[in-house]
Amino acid sequence: MGKKTKKVASEVEALKAEVARLRKEVASLRTLQDAKLKAEIESLHKKIHTELEQAEQRAERDEKDAKEKVIGLERKAAKAGSKAKADVEAGLVRVRKKAASLKTQKDYEEPEDRPSVY
Image (cartoon, rainbow, N blue to C red; front, side, top):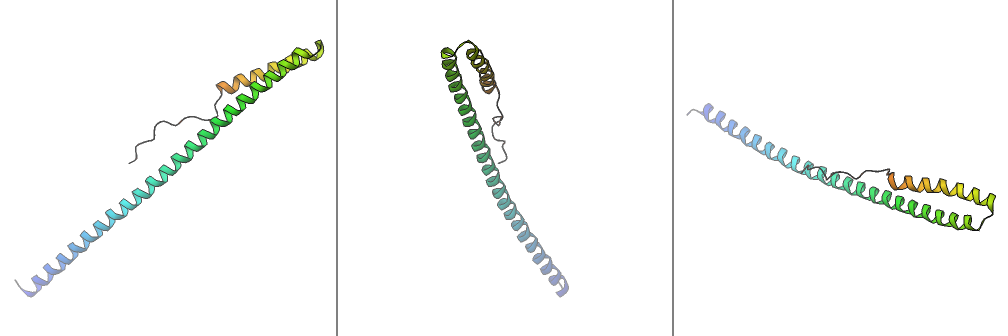
């Protein structure tokens, strides 16, 4: 082999080595980026779970409050005179309707299982 051929072969080998190094770097960056994205997704899933738990607790609290209000109005209606009793019973009907809607109405949805992004 001549000097030029050896020089070209040497340069080609150096370029191949640089390409291999760059490929490893790209793979490493992809792995790092994947890990960051997975961590962000997990964080968002935790936030969703927290929000849903809070919404469920609010719904339970609202339902409990409505039931307590119904009980109080029923007691008041039992003690009240005929006109006042009719007013209290009308209020009781409204509260019962609201309480019934709280049982069936959810302002949130449970998410399906976490999508597999891993």
